[in-house]
Image (cartoon, rainbow, N blue to C red; front, side, top):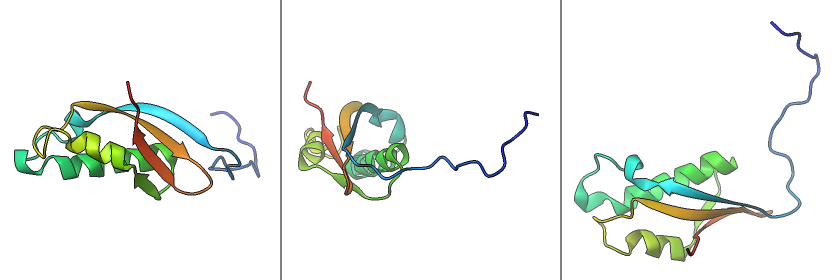
Length: 101
C-alpha cells in the first residue's frame, strides 16, 4: 500500500467565486424504465433533479420552465429519450435549462 500523508487537505467543494456551467446529455429513457405510461413525466423530472444534485454536489436544484416544457412537450406518456441540459452553479442554487440544439 502507498504511504498516506497525515493532515492532508480534504478534497471537497470549495467556495465558488464564478459561475460554473456544465452541459450534459441525460438519458431519461433508462432512468424511467418500468414506470407506467400515465406517470412518466413527473418521475423523469425527479430523475433529472437527482442527476443534477449528484453531478454538482448540492441539494439546491431549480428546474427552468423551459426544461419542464421540453420534458412535457409530448405529454405525460411520451417523454423524450434523452435531453441535453446545462447545469449552472452560481453563488446561489443550481439552475437547469434545456440546451437548444
